Every structure is written in structure tokens, then in C-alpha cells.
Image: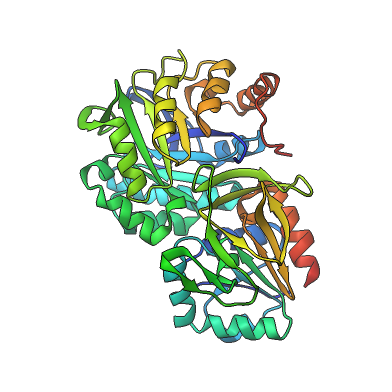
Length: 184
Length: 247
């Protein structure tokens, strides 16, 4: 199986690559649009600010490659900011247009401590993952929430997670194995 | 609110975990990757590695530690000590760390916090505040930073910090309990998550800290013993603190 992790200067690509390696999957880290298009699974990681990340995606031509993948119904996993960039827009950095693979927008968290950092269970299943974010998706495509905040999004071949499966210990590994790799 | 976090803190120098009382006579107590992995297995929610030597040779060793920890530990970790520039911080995150912690460098040049937040995102920027009597200390707490602790915490938040690691210097190593008053004051002053540090002697102290802070940093209370973390988690559960099911 060929997994490509999009490298565009705004992701913890090494951590994601190591998480797949622990599952016995050798993932390629790269910014080549052709590789991203051809992979069995493309992963869009992301930490940091939305504006600069979106500019970097466009600079590498990864925006088009990801949109084409989605149109062809080929699996994509967006992690944290990678989920938020897949929406139509985010209100971060004064408003940034996203890839529009998923309807909805990312809005700043209201209430609680912000950034929201730490382990929290899914409201539906109780599975507990690690989060670190100040913005969250508001979308009809949400399939799971954590403390009422969008945690998992599915839209066609796109799966987005607000948490970091690569840093969520055994639970994160189970998620990647059962809900990402098994669908490829 | 996410679940309260227990965060073992490992002091490292030249690539090894060390232990020293007030920076005198450092003793080698193990390999950071082995100890970090053992804490992770014992239910740690995150880890903090502090490079306390911060020599040039140690910087390279620290990056190697971060890279090896990322390889073997699947929970988040913070790296601190000797980070003075965005480049220093970026290298640590690229190695696989999730957050960097800055202290004296931010006091010397507060704009560093903004630069780090712009490049890495606020969630990756921890400002460590050493406090004593409501005043900030710098340079491993050897100097008065001439700042009020609450005012500095607010400034850190305004500049884009994502978390505060608050060490009460007068409690550190005393095992007499965390400085709950200062923690509560800071909690009211900022909306950032706060990690409490300094003074933990028993489970009651940790439980009390977790009622006013989001996480507790655990150093001398663990004696570099992952089994102690397991027993502490059990004791905290009995005291009504809901922790992550780490299985």
C-alpha cells in the first residue's frame, strides 16, 4: 500500500510517518503533486496557522492534487489543521479560503481554555484522543464530536480528524489501523 | 475541558537524563527514550524534556533525543532549554516534538513568543514561568526578572503563547504542595491552559493542583520510577480525579 504524507512546511510529518511505521506501513513524505494523486492514501497533516499553510499548499500545487483526488473518490486523511483546510473557509488569520472538499467552516473555539490542549473522549464511543487546537470545524459532515466539538468528519473519500492520532498512543494507532488503512 | 493531565518531567544533559539538587553534582539516571517510553506505558499523558545544560554540544544531543523519543513514544512531548530562535524551535518540532518551552529567552525578548506562534501555531508554544512571591525569576531562577507574574502571564497570552508552565520556585523540591494561590490567580487572569509545577509531595497535592490547573508536572515525586506514576494514578482516581484511560 502506498501512503503519501503531504509535506508543505506546516505539518508534523515525521510524527505521522513514524505512526504509520509503527503499523508496518512505510509512508512517503513528499510534496510532489503526482505522488499525492497516485497514492492509495494521501495524508494532509497540519499544525500552525491556516493562512501560511494554505499558501504553502497552493505553492506546491497540492491544493489541485487533493481536489482531484477527492473528485476521483480516492481516500484522503486530514489531521487537525489538515481537516480545517479541507473546509470551505476558516475564520483564522482574518478569513482564509479552504479546499472546499467538505462543506462548512472553521471557527474559533468559544469558552473553555484556548488552545484546547489535552486528551478528551469522543461523545459517541468514549475513545480518547489528544487534541491541540484553537479553531474547530462547523460542518454537517461531522460524524463524531468531543465535548460537543467536531472530532471526526467524513465527506466522500475524505476523512478528517481534529485530534492527533499519531500522538494518541494505542487509541490513535487503533484509529489509523481500523478507520483509515482498512478503507484503502 | 479535556481531562487533567499528568506530565513527567525529565531533565536532560548531553543526551542523558540527569538528576541534581539545585544544579549541583548532576547524576546520570538513565536514557531519555527508555525512561520516556516507560512513563508512556505507565499512563503519562504527555512528557516534558528540559535540556538543563544548554551548551552547544548539548543542543545537538537534545535534537537527537527529540528525534529518538518521537520514534519510540506515541504520546505528545514538549522540549525546552536553550531555545532562543524560531530556527531552534522549528528544528525541535521537525524532529517530532509537539511543543517547545521557552523561559529566559522570552523574558529577554518577548517578541520571540509572537515569532514562534506565527511560525508554529500557539498550540506549540509553551512559556515557562518561574515565580516566587508574585514575581518572575529568570536564568534558572537565579535572577529577578523584574516582572510581576500575573502581568507577565497576561503578556504571554497577548503575544500568542499557547500554554503556561508555572513553577513555584519557593516550593520546588520541597514536597510541601503546589502553590495553589498563585495557580488560581493565574487561572483567573488568562484563558490559556496552565501546567502546575513545583512542590508535589503526594497524591493529595497533585489532586489539589489539578483542581485549579489543567495539568501537573511531575518531577521529584516520581523518583524516575514509572511504577510510582502507576500508583499515583490509582491514588488520584481514589481521590476522585478523572484521568484518561491509558489502555
